[in-house]
Amino acid sequence: QFYRFIIFPGKWIKVWYDRLTLLALLDRTEDVKENVLAVLLVVLVSFLGFLTLNQGFCKDIWVLLFCLVMASCQYSLLK
Image (tube, rainbow, N blue to C red; front, side, top):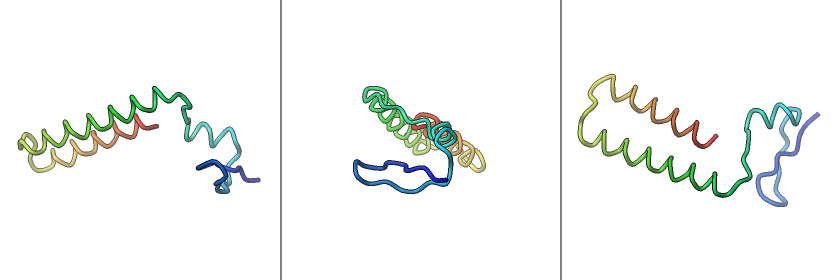
């Protein structure tokens, strides 16, 4: 059994999960204010990360770890 995952109005793809598993996986929010705030926070994290890396505070392996932390923050905000 598949679930129709709506991308845009009138556009969907087949996903081979049941509806509850898919919603738990993606956990979409419908509130526009919360989505805009999350996108603004993601942009802020990106900008501050750029400034931090540009200043040279992190060197060697710490650059990789810092980028992993930034990526996990952005993923958490957008999820």
